[in-house]
Structure formats: C-alpha cells, structure tokens
Image (cartoon, rainbow, N blue to C red; front, side):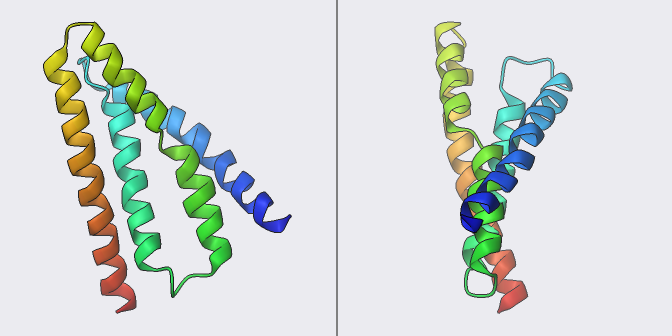
Length: 123
C-alpha cells in the first residue's frame, strides 16, 4: 500500500506540472510544433535516465515516487502520438516527421545524458 501511495503522490505532482509546463512552453512559440509536449518528454527522459543510472544508489521507494509516479505523469506518449497525427492530418507533414524524429533523438539523448550524470555522481 505504501508503494501505491508513493506512485500516486508522484503523479499528483507530475500531472499538473506537465499541464503547466506544456502551456507555458507552447505559449512562447508561435508554431504548430508541439514544443510543450516535446519539452516535458525530454525532461522526463533525462530524469528517468538519471534514476536508471542511480538505481543502486537510491532507495527503491524514491524510484517509485519519482520514476513511476512523477515521470509517469509528467511524460506523455499519448499526447505525443495525438499531436503527431494532428500535424499529419493538418498537412504539416514535415513537422509531424520532425516531431517523431526529434522526440526519439532528444529523448534517447536525454536518457544517456541522465545516466552519464548519475555515473559522474555515483561513480
């Protein structure tokens, strides 16, 4: 039960932060490209990479709180998918392809960066 509450607590922070961050980032860009979703997904990937690299050094409960709860609610594959399809249907096909490509490259790059940072800290 405690573990479930940790996941819920992380989600209670991650979900509203995703909404606020998405709206704040998107409001600063006059573009069809979904910068808000892209940003939260890249940030979540960085945090998850750090947690993955730190798995041996951090308590499992913290991994549940931050990794499963917070990052699970912060990042959004469904919104990424929806926005990509919407771009494609709106005939912004280059942006749809750019969204997929940039999200994969930046997301994986962020995971590797997070792992590298954790390795530099925990050795």
